Image (cartoon, rainbow over all chains, first blue to last red; front, side, top):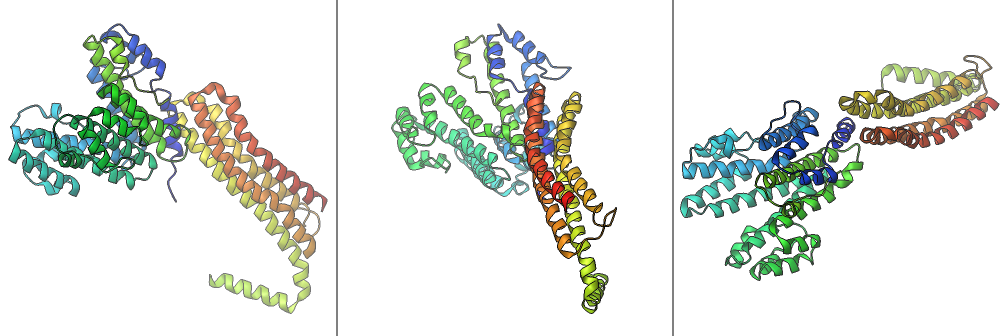
Length: 324
Length: 177
């Protein structure tokens, strides 16, 4: 019998009441300083009864709590693996660069938990040049990135190879995923990455072939046209985008990179919002994790801004729409 | 097919062929009992599915908010009524066809009993499943805002209307045969 997610979705319905609303974000923004913002979050229950006073520790505790809940609801399930894929590639990037630079930095600072493969395994596979231990697509990307880094010493090119491989793997995982929400996630993530790549390439002096090779094939974007636009500058990218299904990203793109990132997150939030009314499918679980990660990302930006004394109007640009 | 069942069907068919009177005598109650069984089975299955769905949703909410127990229990139980309606129709029929009282019907009347049981059997099955789904959605609504209990309860209760209509048709027909 096909599994339904009635129990899990009902529990998530309750958890959704704990997500920060627009009013909460406004209140957080209005807090006079970093300590007051932390106090507001701990009052909302962030960090649990022994909430750390340090912002980053608080956010890590919340990330861990979200994944612990998912582990409890979906023990041994690979349903959420596509959401964790990018962490694997992030760790792969760190492992390759650490090997190349010989950096002795504490692995805890370089690697992130929560991927589908333990960071130590990735690190060992790279250090021992035993890439076959990794999934096929990942091993191929790792081999190419290692070779390019050793040959050219170009860390940015190495990042590009791995980022593209991560997005390709994510899109592939989205296509075969049990729930269409994961496909939405993969597509919006890839679109956001392509636009950011095109913007960075605009005015960088890179040739069309290089720019095209950095982009990932994704529905709704014509990569030849996007490459052409990137060659003609930022405004051309915005103009091209206004003709695509992602026209809502065109205006923020004209403002700043952070406004664009914010608009991409808001687009994803809009696309997953119907899951608030679903009660038997895995969509609400996936949407909850996405909403929680967006929320934590937004709070991290706000706390960082408060810590650095940035004015409210600049911080407001980082405010995302709430899922609830 | 099991050899026992095959043997039983063969002997029944043989007995009926050899004695057409026996067939006419017993066929009425066979039809009526099929109706009774359908009313009990289908409405009961629907209720079991509906209450099961509501129970899973209720358990999910109670994991985080145990204080909502009484409210979610009511919502969980709403799809359980169809099974009771099926049982009620079955009891009335059994009381008239010579099982718990009354007299065994002839074949034609037996078919009428069967037909009379069908509305609650099928409407009971489908309405209980859909009421279960609506209860699950209402439990989700309650989880988000416990003060909406009245509204949350009304939504699945609307589905009940059609089970009651089917119950009325079945019970009035069975009673007047």
